[in-house]
Length: 141
Image 1 (cartoon, helix red, strand yellow):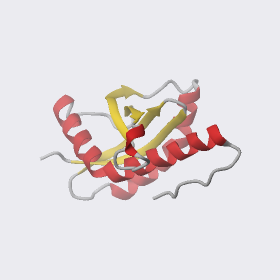
Image 2: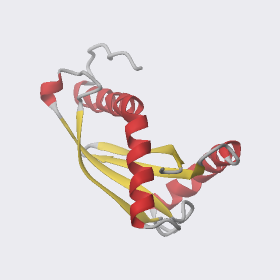
Image 3: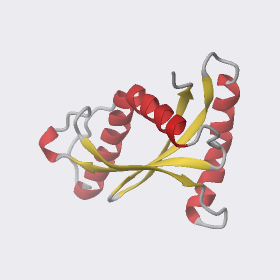
Image 4: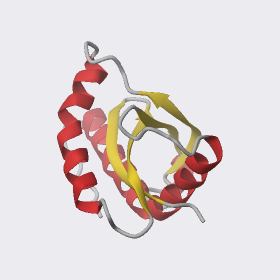
């Protein structure tokens, strides 16, 4: 978990950085639920989901009443599967840079019981750059 940043003269920037840390912690704390939800959604929507051509896009909003508690700091406002961005876009270039990390994780997990694939996830939050992370998706039973 990240520790809160000390106050300084970067005020607004520091607030965004703290929220980025909170978002990372929020995702870490809810990772298992997200994995189960995504496995269920992939199973229900399309059992032949292509993990290399699609990703999960989450939008979240900050909950100021959380008091900085990472488990309640954000509210999921939308979640959907979308096609990977075109490679000639800024987001596509970002995906290309992230892909080797995802492929390495995928290679490590292949063959594990119930493993279906590695889902790239993007979390959108206003004023915080898109945050990319990986979820291991296990077979939904």
